[in-house]
Image 1 (cartoon, helix red, strand yellow):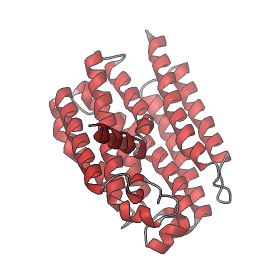
Image 2: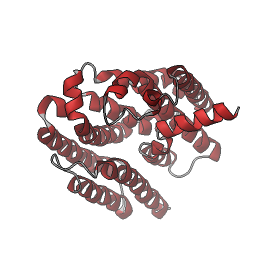
Image 3: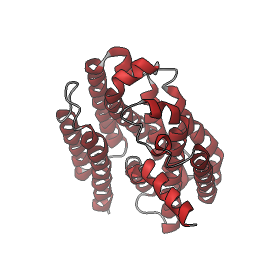
Length: 288
């Protein structure tokens, strides 16, 4: 039992489960808007369980699918599977359990969430193979995170409002953009391994400009989203805060200096998601 618990701990560390914070705040934002406040705690709990389980399944499957590639990449060869800390079978088993938890959570929410859960899994698990076939794999990752707001809305309402798809598109471009930046670290490896990415196809400088355009488009979508949901002062301050944080994120990395990429990728994006949730929550509270 101790050995299994240690392996689970290693797996959680490998998939950086704490980074569920990337998409979770946007899901909670949609949840609050759908309920016009806070739904019952049971609903909140199952949405959180579904989100964490879905991301855990996607990340574990990605590490399983990419184990051989990770072993060849100097940046990733210290991950748990290449180092022999975990077997591929154990990680695959963890993935299956996480998928089962996700499906159970979807079933507890409502019928439509359960019916659409397999579609979400195709996106979440299929992303791992996109970089083998297209330079636009970054948008696959973006969509995997972008589904979160729409899924949370459906979890609350039992139906889909087209307005929430604007936030799905915004999150897709936001996540896709920072994945473009992150992929610049693997520019040389991807070229030698025959993998596809925007940095590999067009070079880091062009990739940085593409990420900037994607993030500007994301801000435009947030403005549209704010109009659709009649944001008040706090909501609009949230959009401004996201814009300032994105500008800072882009200021600390460049095609010639990727040393602060982890700070830009992990820290700042978590802050962006939480800040937006905070301001939208305040906006809803001030309307009461």
